[in-house]
Length: 45
Image (cartoon, rainbow, N blue to C red; front, side):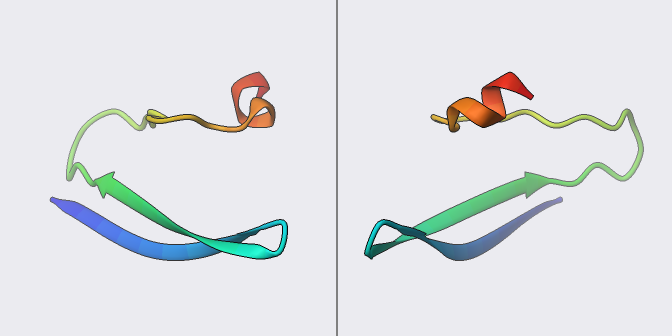
């Protein structure tokens, strides 16, 4: 089952829309995968 959330963030003086799609597994291992171009601080964590 997948869920999609739409949000927004500010980038300087402009707003940017953000779309997050999550695949929710009913049973299985807990994990997450980042897809796209995350910020450097995310890559280092």
